[in-house]
Length: 568
Image 1 (cartoon, helix red, strand yellow):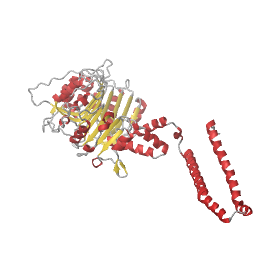
Image 2 (tube, one colour):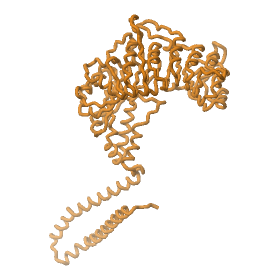
Image 3 (tube, one colour):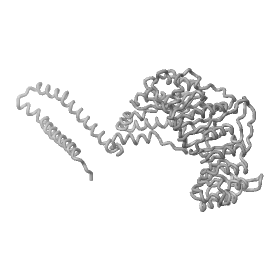
Image 4 (cartoon, helix red, strand yellow):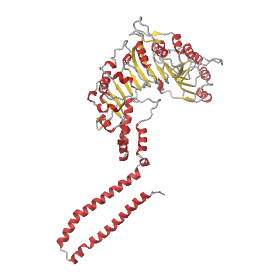
């Protein structure tokens, strides 16, 4: 039933033979103990001598014997429990166990479920401590692998919503550094408006630092920690920098009142650090882009929730990217710029070629910002994701002025110059519909290459459906042939018009997902009911539409949620 190798058989046989020999020896010893008294009398042994010998045996030999028997019993019981209770996974080599533990500790990134940085840190350290407590074998593997401790947390618990604690104390930055061995390090810091980061000494670890991620409620705190790292002569090899100013209120003051981060301290190698990065992520961080030159190492740049200042600052940023010839991903999300207040200054847009750019995302940008971005980058081989909101038809207002409205034709002219792969249209409830039926018809005519359409929170009345519906004319080439359509939280007012709209794309359509409600009844007394699966409209989609999916209405798709600051 069980197959044992030769060495296992030899070990067990030796243990059994030793046990049998011990049993015989103890049996003989017991017989001698029984006959010791009578035989000693026959031999004429003085009673005091015999008593002394027995006392000596009880104090030494028997004590040793009892200890050894108890010890062997304990060892055998522990061995038995280990071989029976521990999962077969413990039979794996340390290398295989380490690989398995890596997947447990570091979950793969799920784009559909962005996880905040603090939650990711909590999960990592909870997983580590759970694995440490399983058994000594697992504990030894965890402690021996420095990469499991390469994420170095610096957390001010008084200003963070999470609680990483050990016996009532915050998780130890020093303990993680100690256990990390010689592996590369990744710094993850969470601060409030104040911090004691001056007490942190990372000097002897700087050469191993590969990434820095800081989120704080004060740019001054961010600057202080960076100042600890960016010391003159520091042997830095950082390739990824992520900085997030976590403000409760987005600063749209014109011009921005927030201090420029690169001016907080007279750093001599701050610009050098930025110039050596491969990944740079910034949220609500002000930099002097005219002082920055990126190298060919930069492959990803992400800016979100950031007030850059005047349009000329955006131009400085784009100009600095001209040397980033290996850039693959460029994302601008809710980035604000405003026209130069001096009307005598002519904004000269740069002409930039990014030959290796693969993906560019432009989300929730005012028209003036969007126009500069799209018209400056001349390379067209990348996948362009346009996420349009009501800002598309507005120019950033100065101070407390109302936004200047932009005619549809101006936006359409910009869109004709680019190749759009994915179009996202978002209707904010508090703004009302910012896109008319004719507007969307003009948009789609200007973007014939769009493959994916995502729309959230739109009212599909009959005329709106007809303007999105693809023309019947076979020679009509200046209109998209959607492969993927994703409609969420939509209101459908005319089933036939809605079905005709979707059916016009059946020839090219590969997938459609829908979540929304049917609006019935006369105007002013409409009744709304979420689509749940039993409606004739849903039945029609299941029978006719390719790869149709009915989604829940109780959730916002990740593409339309507010950006989440993540660990990775």
